[in-house]
Amino acid sequence: MNPVDRKLLVGLIGAGIQRSLTPAMQEEEARHHGLRLHYQLIDLDLVAGSPMPLPGLLAAARVMGFAGLNITFPCKQAVVPLLDELSPEARAIGAVNTVLLRDGRLVGHNTDGSGWAWGFRRALPGADLGCVVLLGAGGAGSAIAHAALHLGVAQLRLVDTDPGRADALAEALNARHPGRVVAVADPAQALAGATGLIHATPTGMAEPGLPVAAALLRRALWVSEIVYFPIETELLRAARALGCATADGGTMAVGQAVGTFRLFTGLEADAARIERHFLRLLHDRCGADGNA
Image: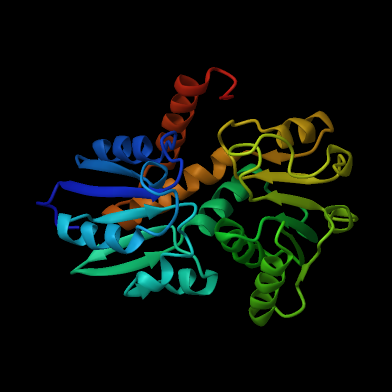
């Protein structure tokens, strides 16, 4: 980044994003670096509630001088064919959550997997990676699947409400990691003998309740959650009641923030400072227990 250019305009495109903590986290970290960074929320729920306006929004971002965009549900996969270039990670995953605008070109990146891995290593060091169940094969789930395999997961079992989507992701992953991924339709069958569970669906945030029956959890299973509104989901509450080791969705949120800040600004964020600010924001918005 040019040191004389101390202002950045960025945006967040997605549906139901009014409660996102990403803008406040990034703006505050930028302030510590002497930058003025403004995040514009572009909420599709206020327009059409679908990725349909994406081409127009991307064209407008070029004209208005945006430095970058964060992309979230339901646009992470829909945005891919609209971009000029993809990072190797985004190309492998088939989904994008960060777009950089450089010299008029739109370059797609993905920090979902790296953000999850960053938080997972800190929250669950030494976790048994022998057999892991991943709930959700969408944009975030795909990114996390790639990251989990790179971390050393020996067998990854994919479960999705759309079995065809899980099958397609398993096939794509096995092309790079032969024999290590299987799609399983029944959550009970998938969790039998598993050592860990990663939850990558909106259940617990957009949809109340548990993504799997509490009876399927057991003490020996570690649980990694990506939802952070609320910070203690029903899944985490049930897992902790059994004595499971857990990682809440805040660990991924902080990891993503660190990676996104680097992409947007070219600067290294202070991860501990971002985490402190994230926890303050949660407290202020949701109360001491982090529940909405």
